[in-house]
Image 1 (cartoon, rainbow over the protein chains, first blue to last red):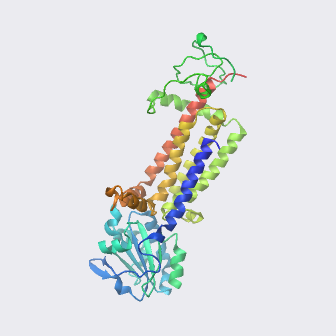
Image 2 (image 1 turned 60 degrees about the vertical axis):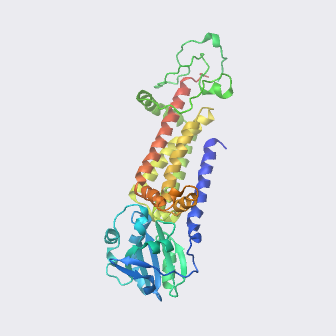
Image 3 (image 1 turned 90 degrees about the horizontal axis):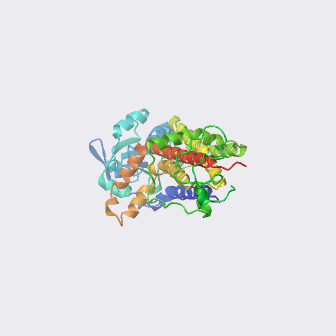
Length: 176
Length: 241
């Protein structure tokens, strides 16, 4: 192969390596599918809220950083499925990562008002900020975007990222 | 190429084999013999020992950059004078446009690439995809042209590879778990990388994507001008058949 072809082959190999690595990364988070979702507290407005309050409900717990484009895309996309979420009794808890993942970005309120105006006041949506302890449990590696689908019995069913890329998984969970 | 090396008959000569049109040859300090290209070709085959290469690449000055830019049109004319080059360029454009269209929107899918990425294409990403694919579509035929004639293309190929890698890796790294995992792994050796370092890097990548795409485009354009310089330099010395 001429040098340019060899180089192109190496670039393709690197991309092929990155792709499965990124999608399979969540198989190795400390909290995995099949484990009990640990109890923790987050802040909604100024008041502390415990995850224990959601026991018995189907929950999507989503931690994101406001500077993250996939998080913005998710916040734009999820409200369009509100009807199906209500039908499936899915409760969404949207939390800003502890210290916004270490990089400044717009506030959670700004994000909500800009991208998810239509779900304002909806009873199955809760916005808040992750506490240090919750982040240590649910996002110890400080991923910019990670969500957990937690069943009524408190067992984690799925750990993933980028809700827009995994919308089918979320909808299947809502209807399951 | 024909002609013998006659060190005793060196003298200043006009470039041989000028095929018409403007051919602004950069000043070549080496003496050379009529009918023999003194450039890299002879050094490649070991017939003439080359000058010692500097440890670091030399940054060209403004005059050289101007000369190089004037050489771009003749170089493009020379490269795309055959149907094969046009075909190579067309295929390269199609392939890289497809690659960019499924990769650049990975910034919205957390690093996941594939056909689903089309749903997240924005006008800005589409413009970047077309522009970067166009640069590669011009660059690859030029590189192939140089390599087929035994001329130097290593530097430009490396620069082009840098541009390609920067443009493809930026959307893959910005919002995927790759960097946090890598930083967590490296933190065992470099403790300062533990904590929020991964977030700082990813945050910067995510909020400055256009900057990285611009750097990538500049690298590709640099490779283009580099190749153009090599093509016009070598064609000024070509021996007429």
